[in-house]
Figure 1: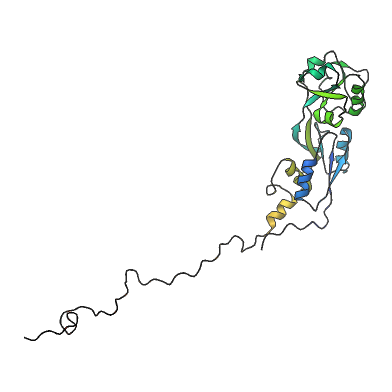
Figure 2 (figure 1 turned 90 degrees about the vertical axis):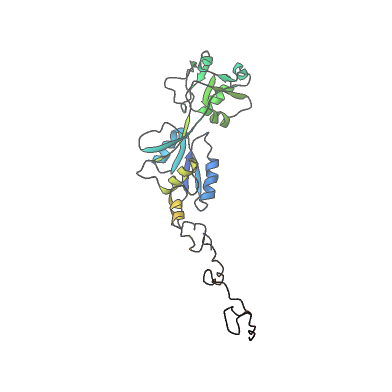
Length: 268
């Protein structure tokens, strides 16, 4: 008898995961589907401005978003930092550079969209535009039209890729930090805990949550792991040191007909 797989939860609700543009949850979704095949994972794409409201309104159980978290009623664990890049037209002189610095942007019109994700402490380097674009997508359109350059996380540059644009890494500027966030509680819900384990790289056995508890609760087959019984032991030996008596030869002794090999004595 072997351990049987976990039985599907009778009323398993879907786990709703929101994510902002540029964040790719696909590798974590695949792991979820392998570990919890009976619990569907529903992806909810949201804008950066919508992400926190979706969590508060119950529209998602957790969200992959960019820090900082808005308010103290949400929990978050940072996952990774993104490289910042400058998006420029392919024929721009920056296209010949391998890497840029804020000083390189001093004479450039740098666009600063309202949905910016880099969290500049002041304002971006370079010359400010007369009006801020509404979204990053709008800013990309302006760059393609030859109106300024744009500093964004590399994932957004890839998301808004165009054949007439390119980008170069820039150092010395803020970097976007991607995090997993969920409504704050004394203890994270079971499915949220399962997803935390996945994004943190926990193994199946070390993952906390409902499924881990079920695995721990499964009783192992009492016969499993036992060694097979040994074959019947050999017949017990005779008392230690005792040798079997020799047959066919009478014991030697003095006198008597059996005295010397059983030969009779000669008379005098």
